[in-house]
Length: 132
Ligand SMILES: CC[C@@H](C(=O)O)C(=O)SCCNC(=O)CCNC(=O)[C@H](O)C(C)(C)COP(=O)(O)OP(=O)(O)OC[C@H]1O[C@@H](n2cnc3c(N)ncnc32)[C@H](O)[C@@H]1OP(=O)(O)O
Ligand SMILES: [Co+2]
Image (cartoon, rainbow, N blue to C red; front, side):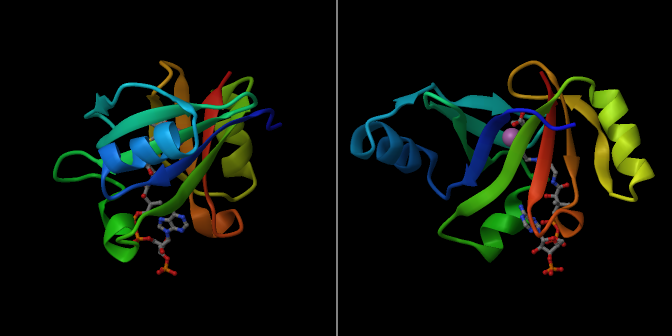
């Protein structure tokens, strides 16, 4: 069911510093920061030839990544995002398989529908699915 790796997300304690590491030290092309209040995060996307890195920093009081940053104050890999053809069908398939779908389907950073799957059901890794 899953297709391409869309992005790997990294939570960073300082978005400007994280962006500078990818842009200046690693020489990658980076986007401007984008605030997404409905997701409780600010993102910067790093464009790679075959995929993307999503730098994430908490936004607002109820950010879903706040606790992760508390537990990992230096930051760290937060989730992987795979593309699917049909997000509704993917959600149904995951529920049938007994996996926990976290919250509702939302519109993600690329203006496409996304959902999240509990890390405890996927080898300790938070999984995001994005409709291609
Ligand atoms: C920009 C939009 C979008 C895009 O288009 O790309 C995004 O990427 S938004 C990204 C942010 N949004 C989300 O992460 C939404 C889904 N996440 C959640 O609902 C929560 O973060 C969570 C996964 C349910 C965890 O919530 P939290 O409050 O941190 O709960 P706990 O601390 O109790 O964690 C429970 C358990 O799970 C472990 N955990 C938590 N986060 C991760 C993680 N990212 N990777 C691996 N494991 C994780 C945590 O350590 C706890 O384990 P135990 O200590 O063993 O109980
Ligand atoms: Co993401």
